Length: 233
Length: 250
Image (tube, rainbow over all chains, first blue to last red; front, side, top):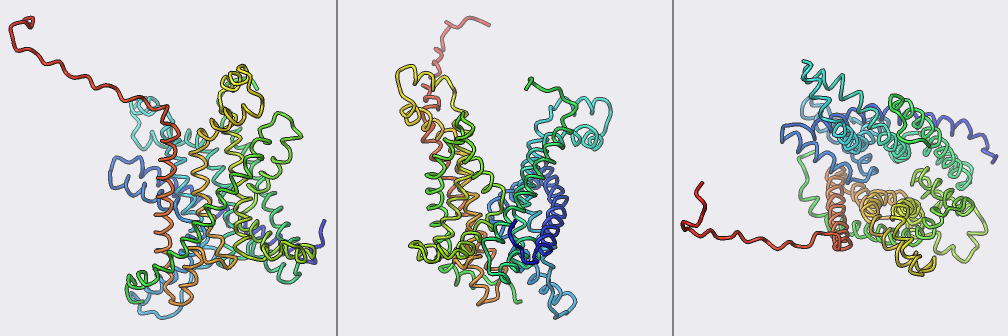
């Protein structure tokens, strides 16, 4: 165990903030992904175009650039709006936490769109037809038949995206959120031991990844409990 | 704020393109070194012997399980903690942010490429390997002539994806003072306060660059798989009907 010189609590506080950021991003990203998938599978050409554009843009942009654009761009845009609408001249700024959540969720949502689209398309058409034939409305079919199965099919993909997003939370340190990476930087500034502390941060991230992987494995097992194992072993 | 600054974008375009060139260098060099490093890693990783698999497994686990930013800082700031490295013969290289970025990105992408390679090696049909062994090729020859070329073919699309992920990851170079596309945009903003315009322009350049890369990889894929495409079929000419009484009456 290396000597953390009293920075243990700082690192823990940072880890807690990293987790809060990741779990704030997750629901928003899933919502964006569902909306994106609905748009891409829509019968309306305009919506399909919008969905495709969203996916192509946010999968092609560096996550760091998205974080920076949202943080600095939102403040410029909001101040411009405030001036025009309310004649307000003060300084407006998104908190790093909100900007980070938005930016990570937009990227997560773009990848999740493709995961959900694949999952929806993997559900045999006959099931929806059968439900329709039983007299359910399209909304009911979606809620009762398609959506519950989507969960099972989308879970592995979403789990991967979550692992990637958890690592991307480190980028939010660049705009000043005091998560694990930022706290580590403080500790390095004080102790002048960059290797010790960055390696410790790396090991903490690695631990988070391992725990998340184990949980995802359990969730996948649970989601697939209704299915017979295909083959022994 | 007075409207969208198209003129400012136009003015800064040469600088942004300079940044894009640095981004391209980072990606191309690390993509190449990453591939070279991934070859032994991926081959060892798919070995049937557990003690051969263990080292590449640990390497891949570390580099895929931690954020790229941490890896970058670990190498750029972290190595300086050791007196031996600061006094060592390589210090004049390792203190350069450019070298550190290249080193980190290569090590990072190598872990991902090694996993791709392992998947591709395992996807080569065993019959092809058996056939190679049956006509007397040794282990190395089989690897060189059969396994690796086939794995390259199978893994190429995934490698293309990884290169594009690396384009996005290379934006982190801006955090250690490099003037890649993102770094250049941030520097320009420090002078002209036009965050929206500069970041959007940089974003468009990234999208174009990624689109071009994607195209190139698709061309490479087509070239590699050309033997799998169906040969052009001879178009069957419709036989002209003779307008005579020879047709059987309906």
